[in-house]
Length: 414
Image 1 (cartoon, rainbow, N blue to C red):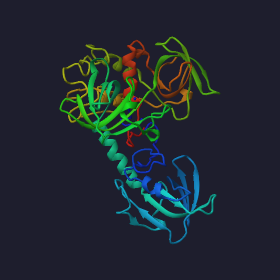
Image 2: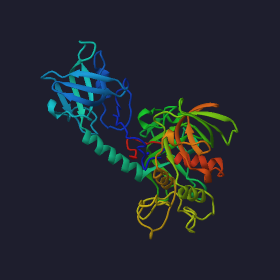
Image 3: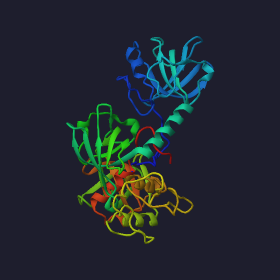
Image 4: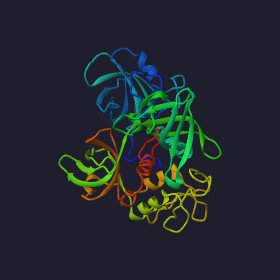
């Protein structure tokens, strides 16, 4: 809803990853259109690895792999070094480069010699994608997700017809959207403990379940009720709301009583949890906007109340909430307000980021966590939500689903 929906969140600076569409042996972690997997499949042992250059000195690179391991790589004179552009599917259009052209932040596939077996290993081929190209691709994808993305909770799935129905928004902002999935649609599934797209894996439509949180991008019809999906990412998580009963700084855990199940839950707060706090004005406005027929704090009709307006964004639209003082959104106060999942995402992504030390006993929170009964790990957490605790559980879930999920390699920066 930086997703758990990021304007697009990057709720933390995102480590960009390669879309390895042809290599099954390497982890495909996100959005670089160049496929390095086919190269890795044909490579002899030891296997090539993919990662990011973190340091460079004459004849030597340090590469942090996508598995999080730092490798020291010797690059002898004469080693083949090539550069590819985002979107390339093979090396047919690769350009020959020099060692001096490699830079910190570049994405690389490194093919190494059998000996030496331990670091520093010796490179026999390096294929690079420049950092600047990665950033440009991220920006393009971020804009595409913002323009053509939808998100919400899964209402139904028909694997036979390829139709997935989701509900986006809440209250007067609620909208039902039918996604049309084809064999060409890229389908991914979040890891059980993360809404980080980098950790999502390829998964068939049969893995999508009713109640899942889902985000998709593609071509929408005129009123936004249908979409020919190009990419879909989904996951099953638990949504919890309640008041913090205790805080343990040593173990980085909080306890709260889940308002829905009435059970006490121990919530582990890891270093990568995305946390924000709603300003009081925003919380009150959200509470009003998610009640059918209610009016916003400024007296205007709740966004989405007008027939056909819910869920629409684009030219001439603006978020229902303009953000903290000094922040504005959309196209201006004089233009029509429209609302939906995208606007909720923008509203929530403007809330200030917080840390574990900012949490206090008695704080009201909404959070997305891993599945579990009494012990869970938080994925995202939203505090300052006192006005929203009276909202139906379905409304709370919808708010969370609109904010917490990262999509594609194009999540928004904090």
